[in-house]
Length: 150
View 1 (cartoon, rainbow, N blue to C red):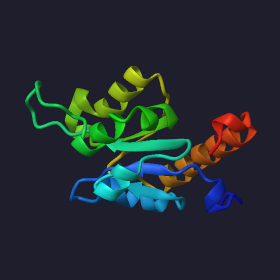
View 2 (cartoon, one colour):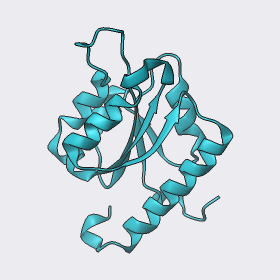
View 3 (spheres, rainbow, N blue to C red):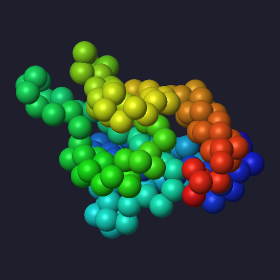
View 4 (cartoon, rainbow, N blue to C red):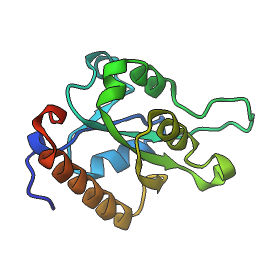
């Protein structure tokens, strides 16, 4: 595990459906995570650099949106959009070409990178790999000029 304290760790804002797959993955990352299903979290907004963990949903209708509404609402705030440093996509490969479509759409429109992709709640190896990716994000932000840090 990384030696960073929670105050030094870049928080992850996430959304999870009632299945809890994305929530489980977020909680396994052992860092500050904030649930966008909670209206208070959405209203409070981001106060420093953060990473988005979002699932993609598709109902079979190509006109349906894959981006969860709480994620859309959170990203509608220009401060939240500006402070987002990257995206972690969660999805289900059974969605075929729509797998990770929300993360890819957000990356394309925001210019922020996809840091990691995971299926469902991920494997233990996925958790270890994503923790390492997030530890690198923490180090990169700590080395950046102070204006870009919390």
